[in-house]
Amino acid sequence: MTVGEKIQKYRKDLGLSQEELGQKLLLSRQTVSLWEKDQTAPTLDNLMRLKEIFGVSIDEILGVDNKTEMAKNKNSLDSICASLAYAMGIDPPKHAAPKNFELTNYIDKVFDGKKADRIVMYNPDAIAQWIYQKYSHFFDDTKEHAEIEIPLATVMPSVTPVCFGTMYTGAQPEVHGIQKYEKPVITIDTLFDALIRAGKKCALITYGKCSLSRIFLERDMDYYHFNEGGITAVNAKAAEVILRDEHDFILIYNGNYDSVMHKMGPESVEALSELRTNCHVFSWISELIKNNWQHHNTLVGFAMDHGCHEIDGGCGSHGLDMAEDINIVHLYKGYPGKED
Ligand SMILES: [Zn+2]
Image 1 (cartoon, helix red, strand yellow):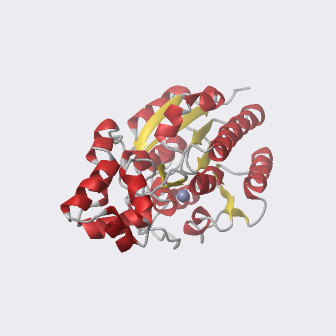
Image 2 (tube, helix red, strand yellow):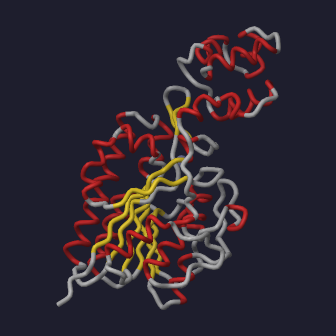
Image 3 (tube, protein in one colour):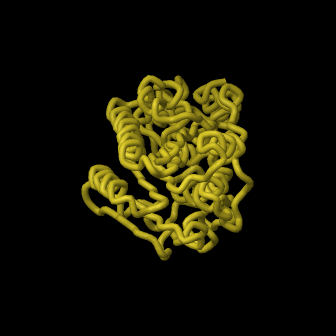
C-alpha cells in the first residue's frame, strides 16, 4: 500500500470524509486528496497530527512497504569512532563501540601495518545512501579519491547533533546524552579527548551556529567557527590549516546540502548543485593532502551524519526511523607517506 492509500484507509476506518479530516488538521480537502493520490506527502508536522488522529505510529503511515524495499544497513555509525582511534594507534574514547572491521582492515592494508599520523574528516550533512546511489555519477570524482565504501546505519533520531555525537564518541545517543535536536556540550569522552590525551592536535572547522560547532566545545583544541561566509569561509580555512600542517586531526563541516535540501527537496536542482559542490570540495581537499602531505600517512573520510527524504513534493526532511534517513555510506582513502 502507498502512503496515500494508507491515509485513505485510516481515514475511512474512522468514518471521516476528506473534508472532515482536513478540518481536523486545519487543511483543505484538496490537500488531503493530494496525499491520498500520492501526488504530495504530508510534512513531518502533519504526520505527527495524523498519527494522533489515527492512533497509529508514523512508521505505520509511512509504510512497511518502504522498509521492505529498502532494508536498513547493518553496521552502526558508532563503529567509526574506534576505527579512527585505531588508525592513529591511540586508545578509543571510553564508551566507543567496537571497531568497524572493514575500515580497520583497509587501514592495515593501505598503511602496510603502520598507523596514520593524520586524519582529515570531511563532514557533509544529510547526504543519504539513496542519493549516493541514484546520483552516483555526481560522485565519480569523489570515488576516485576514495578506496573503500562503508554502508552504515546512523542513529535515532537521525538529526545532526545526535549523529555527530555518535560519530565522535562511538556511543549511542542515550550514552552521549544528545537525544533530540539540541546543542549541549557533550561531557562524555570523545575522540577529541582521546586524541588530546595522546598528545595530538585537533582542529574543528565549522559554521559558528551549527550544532557540530557547539557540542564539542570546551576542549583543548583549535576551533575555527565562521558566522559568515558559509562553506567558502570554512573551506578556505581548511586549505590554510592543511597547508600549515600543524594539526593531526582536522574536521571540516559543510552543511550546504542539508540546508538547501530542507527548503527545496533532496532532488531539487538547487540541492543537487550543493551536492556537486560537496563532491568537488572533497576531491579538492584530497588533492591538497596528496600534494602537500607526502611525508604523512593520512586517512581522509567523506563522512555524512544521516540521510534525508522528500516531503510534500517540494521540501526535504530527516529525523525518522526509515531507511532513507538512516542509511548512509562513508568513503575513505589512505594516503601512505613517502619514505625518503
Ligand atoms: Zn537537516
